[in-house]
Length: 265
Image 1: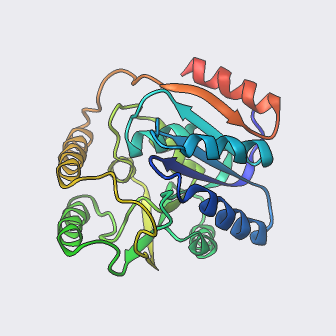
Image 2: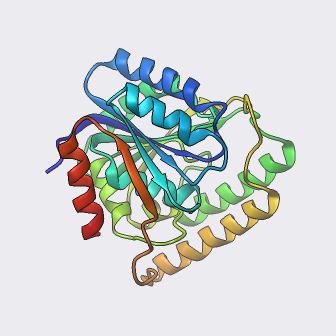
């Protein structure tokens, strides 16, 4: 059995070579100030830039850093789902690698989850506030999120940046699908939600990998997944696990335990 830690942070990485080192520094500073034990799990989604080289170096220098290197690109939500299966934290945070999710908001979001209790699957979202992208993107994003709010009860400002308890993580593990949408899955599993407003800054480097077309496809897939789950028709079978290697970790025992878990899944 893999020993637990107090907090896990799962970060999907794709074309984030310019920001991952600064993200690590800021996340580590925040978690260190909170005390307790923690781990930072980066999931390299077959990033074509130099992200993995930076992550390898971090894992060599800090045993609290774990890197899952994927052999093929599976998309942001699938990458996060795979990282969640490795997470050992009693509280598990998910955030982007582009620094638009400010690590300094973690203490407040973690505290809100602690205040909410652990009796049922619970998620605290860092609700997206501010003008953090172009107006056309803002309008389409808010329309889609409002639709999910009306249909599923998700907070209208919910993004990927959130903290969940172990019961919520277990809810996501029920559905091993090729194209997950985590917020939809949590809503259909009956999780309870809290939203804490957090100002989201502009992207400091690079551009989003989501074109308008990709955003539309993602929205349609999310709605289709929601419909299937609402009708109790989850996708059948298991999706491939394209994990090429697990780098880092606090001990060889944990890495061996991860390999056993992966093979059994």
